[in-house]
Image (cartoon, rainbow, N blue to C red; front, side, top):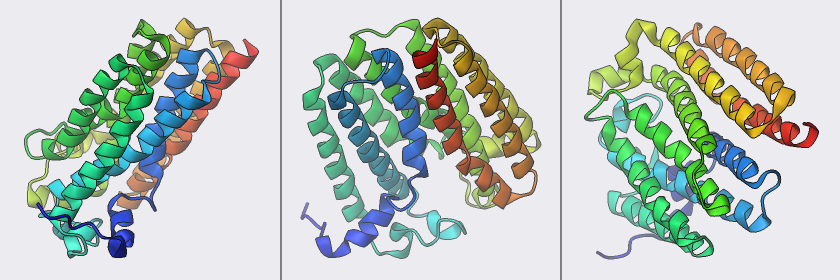
Amino acid sequence: MKLQLTLTNWQSYSRLMRLEKPIGTFLLLWPTYWALWLASGGMPEWSMLLVFTLGVVLMRAAGCVINDYADRNFDGAVERTKQRPLATGEVSPTEALQLFVLLLVLSALLLLLLDWRSAALSLVAVLLAASYPFMKRITHLPQVVLGAAFSWGMVMSFMAIQGQLPLLVWLLYAANLLWTVAYDTFYAMVDKDDDEKIGVKSTARLFGKYNLWVIALLQLGALALLEWAGALAGLGWPFSVALLLVLLLFMQQHRMARTGREGCFRAFLQNHYVGLVIFIGIVAGQMFV
């Protein structure tokens, strides 16, 4: 296959990777930071912080590219996505695939700085990231696959730092999975009408009129698991206060979502602050308890 990537088209590649929309990177980065700080018992080594931060940026970009490649025949029919580079023809499918491979290669180079067990776990991350976009064709639960993918960096973090996977990391994993399904259902509610027309499946279509009720249950489940994780890690009252603030943020999200599609999108975006507040709660719990 002839190399089609060219520097003259870098602006289109940047938009394909959503570099101008960092919300997805933050939603992937905060849980990874939760795990890095908890696995290290405080500030992790700079090498670990750099490897996992760069890994998050590269893998999120790769996920966006393969997502748009999978949706290239559908995005043009959806109002929110009709101007994406693959939908408009600014980037060819071959260019997208080559960019995806390049991002995976760059991510693989980071693995040279980790032990072999962490590197082996990365194969699961690649499989989840690559399969998620295609799940919309076969199941109404693609958000669960996304949650599994967005949570895997925590598993790799614990393995890289502790060389083991204790109960704590699986509590974090389950909590983050529930949280991801919740906020990505808000996101899917924005496209629900368009998805129904073109046959794309989602939790928003599955839950239907019960969307907000199910999202609330998922959010409460995530909070319960995080409280358990905080108790196990000995984070004490600062972390519990952070989770109370998160509960208030969740309540605000539901008020936003009741106003319509734009409100659902704003509720989705606000989850960046949820991840940040939980991170602050972890750091505060480690410092003051």
